[in-house]
Length: 164
Length: 414
Image 1 (cartoon, rainbow over the protein chains, first blue to last red):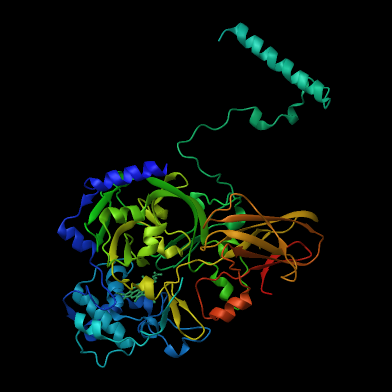
Image 2: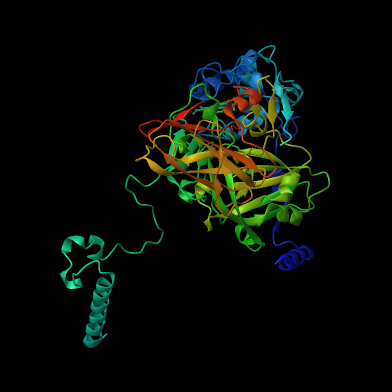
């Protein structure tokens, strides 16, 4: 049984693969991830000012006007409650990396139309989320790849990696 | 068939029936004299026709999953396995728990490929036909959602049936191709330390797995309990990551990217991380810890009569095999060892049983599981002390069911 498996396996290895080799563009599409350090963030930008209307139209119905009190998870919370019995899970409270926020909104929100926002729209909504979380000095700041890559999130060091 | 043959056959049957009746001495009636009332109805008319795919009975006693979902986003939620209505260790496919973040996608398998890229010698696309040409293997394994049993963190015991507290765990025989074999086919570069796994769902579910695990016992599963995956369980392919929390067992598998670091998706860093009492959270806490629960008797059930009862339940661990399960009927004051039903399998649900005699008295039933590495299931108090009451995931505490003098069973904390 084992021998048989090894024979099949080595036969496969010697030849070209049964699988199809991906074209360079397909390969890029697969590898198109946005990492915690901002690698993969697209070219484009937005401001919280621009994000305000988008958020009001596309997000507030579930997440509340300013990230609280809706039917969906709260996006703004109180960091002081993190070690309490009922901790908040807002963006500034919990999220360790800002690029993750871009990635998540791009792929998952709003739930009835994921992937419907343009690059600039995602940057704008993310800028607004950062603003209501107290992470932007003012609403005119340009939020782009450089900005998100450098933004130090308050809970960045709030994690340990499990020894599993 | 000739009339003569038919006559002989009927005569033979009649004589045989007569012989049986006489031999047993139970009845002096001949077959012809049996009163109509003792002939079951099903003997008197042909049954239903064949079916292309068997369906469960539709009467109310047939077990179902209960659904808890977001009212505004109905595809975000769970459905629970009714553990309290099931026996043995294998969960029927239609009752295997579900956790979807934005519905069940409909994937066209003829257009589908599993794509492997990143830090590999070559980037490959595996169609379903190609995957089926690779050597297959089967593994019986449980999958448990990291958030299973989180009601046990609450201040007061939730009164619900066992499956609606603990039923985000199920067990099936999964068949498919070793992920390690497919990664070898692509050729993992030395710098490849993680794999980033993308689902094709509308929730953007993406997770990172350490390469050691990906090369070890992970299966790209195409079949569940012998049949092709159902849509809700990830058709055309899903990952089976034995012993590790549900979220990493990615359904509707799209692509796998070999990387030098985790991607730190929302599912790596925000959801499914374990916040501890000091406000620090643990991430990549993949392994599901040793755990057990009594499925019978359990809340909502009422013991029917005194005397013999079987206490029966399920035990499992992400750490290998269950080595021992103890049962208490007095809230943890004393323990007896339960019998483990064979086969006891690695990272699979294990059924335990213990005979018990109930005499109309109050009792508190608990089960406590041990795994082969010597890990023991903690009490609720111990778990809360260790994790803090602000935790949400990975609750493997001992559960307590109280039996009242009336025989009614309820959920209690002791």
